[in-house]
Image (cartoon, rainbow, N blue to C red):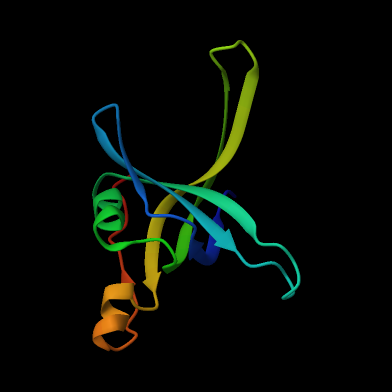
Length: 120
């Protein structure tokens, strides 16, 4: 079983990328620690195609999100020849929690929104 569920806040605006003909959104989510004094865990999240477009359009730094997806591990060699690796979450669903900053400024209600799942 490879399932990951996270709730946290974006540390920066999602970044747009192109990969093999697919639209890609890269995000970093700060997930709170177990207690208030603990440092957050920072998790890289990647969304593709329609889900990526929705995230790029509506998400911004500081927005709280719920992410469901799978854990992915990759290895590669850097230009200087050193080995590199990373874990990241490949998002299947991203739920927008709380209001966007622009909505908060206008006084809109705090209505959760959900992005459409990525095509498999």
